[in-house]
Image 1 (cartoon, helix red, strand yellow):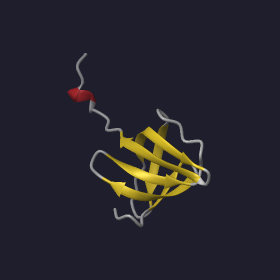
Image 2: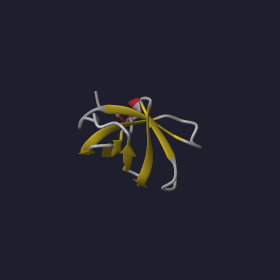
Image 3: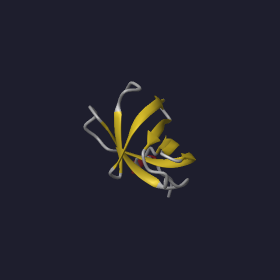
Image 4: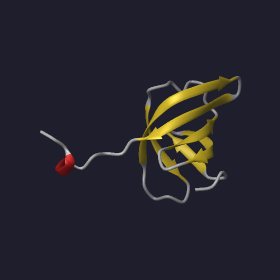
Amino acid sequence: MDGSARLVVRGVGGFVLDVSDMGMRVAVWETSALEGSKVLLWVEGDPKLRPGVVKWARRFPDGSIVGIEFITEVPRSAQRS
């Protein structure tokens, strides 16, 4: 993914500013992004949805910049009972 990738978070559009294996920093048009909110991420050009959680948000009058951590699900076979 490059910095020009378009992102949709629950119908809210935005642009990816930075991405790593652990998460991404995104500029979104909404100012209501709340820390701790779970989100589904769809990045243009990637066919799958990725679950994530908003770890931080910096609000501005015209939108927000948010830090989203990817949620990786642990396979049942690796979970302890």
